[in-house]
Amino acid sequence: MTSFLGHDKAQRIFCQSFDKGTLHHAWILAGPKGLGKAGFAKQAAQFLLDSSVQPTVTNDGFILDDFSQSAKLLTAGSHPDFRLVQRGGKTDKEDKKAREEGIDSLEEHELKRNISIAQIRNLQPLFATQASISRYRVVVIDAIDDLERGGANALLKNLEEPPKDTVFLLVSHAPERLLPTIRSRCQILRFDPLKDDQMRTALSALAPKLDQTEINALIAAGEGAPGKSLQYIDADLAELESLARDIMKTGDKNNQIKSDLARKLSLKAATPRYQAFLSRAPSLMAQHIKTAGTNSAGHPSTKAIDTWRDASNLAAIAVPKALDNQAVIFRLGSLMGSLAEPDRRA
Image 1 (cartoon, rainbow, N blue to C red):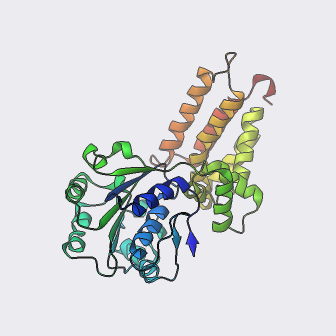
Image 2 (spheres, rainbow, N blue to C red; image 1 turned 60 degrees about the vertical axis):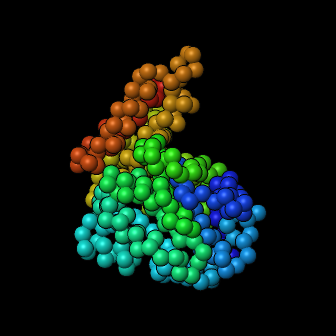
Image 3 (cartoon, rainbow, N blue to C red; image 1 turned 60 degrees about the horizontal axis):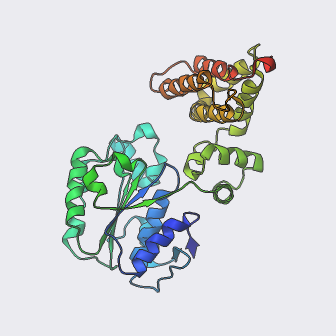
């Protein structure tokens, strides 16, 4: 049997709604990216698809049979009462790779920009007949934020007149940006960041070869989102964070640490580490400012905030504008160094 890690409140709300016979036909699973909302949606889908053929246990959340008919069909991607809607590959080659290896095998630049209206229209045959082997039909859209405007309007028609015994699970990283007409027809289920002990359990299971120093670095970087942590798993983040903190502590006036960091991250083979550092650097600076960069009133200084903003902007544009890696890292290092206390600059 498989249970879902964390998000006990979300599980309890969903399962109680099911038990009481008041299950809403559409749910927005809302929260920052990387929290496990898509994983929750897939387990909720199996929970519903299994519900007509085995006793339902809800006190402990989703307790699922890994060997049920639904589990096997979902794993094979062939359950007749289930649809997963995601962005596809940009090209036929990338679409083929996604079919053979899974959509997660594609990098961001290999994915289409949006979920198309055609993908939503392709759901209609599912709604034209009754469920085949389960009581429910389940549609997971990951993420509804990616729907193009026409697709959102097409989906709205199904939400306004929901097909019988059909449940929509809509993953959203930014629910406030969705059409108000979609939000008003859904029940919002909010997901909070996982606690450190839950993060440790999740990361230890997902990456058992990591040592505790590496896991601690990933926990800090993930900020309660295991998916976010996994983006850094091959980046040797502990070393990069250590160098960054040394810069912010000492100021690195002789540029030795900055040069070392820029050299490490400027090589073509270091691209994943470079991108991980760009993503992580503003958060490291914000943490440093909170603990050390305050003025006499106990608030972050305007200069420190401006420095953090400059670093955030630089990190955001570096890859899209193809800026020189070494120059970007050296500049970020200089901004970090400016946060050091004057009497500690070496």
